Image (cartoon, rainbow, N blue to C red; front, top):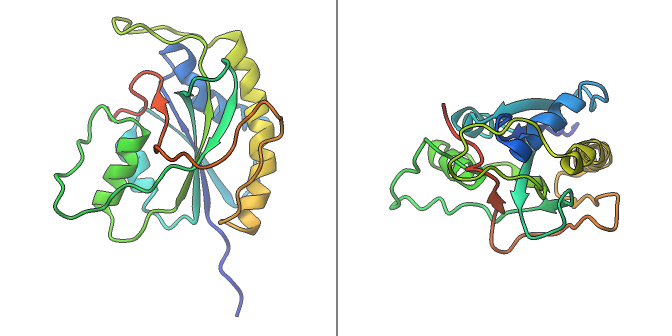
Length: 198
């Protein structure tokens, strides 16, 4: 009996109008020039958290979310994070579907679905330019994060074959200044509210 093909989602997350929060969508756009294998679903979810929550319920083995996240590293540093799965306790109130960051997207997907979520990894970039709380719009990403976009594309081309061969593997990033490993505290802080539903 043949094992069914591994299903892998690569999802860009972030707001293109809020400075370095555009990292995830920019990486997905750069993948148009250097596509991943055809069996990988690559999609820019932007700030559509509800859409991403439902997509995570579509039978994937692994999902890689690409996002800008504050982790305390030098700007432009890439990190590979494996967050703790959200608690799917039945007694908890349903998660809010608006103003969602990636952690809330995972909580909502857990609440909506009967099946377990796929393994989720976050390919995060430390932002340099973050919008202030009163900024409605701050277009354009910093040069530092723009440089990290191509490194993230290269990292995905390294990671994806490893994950397609073994969804439980922990793929390395390609440079020593990039960190890997599980995140005991869960997801990193989003840059500006992360994923929202609009």
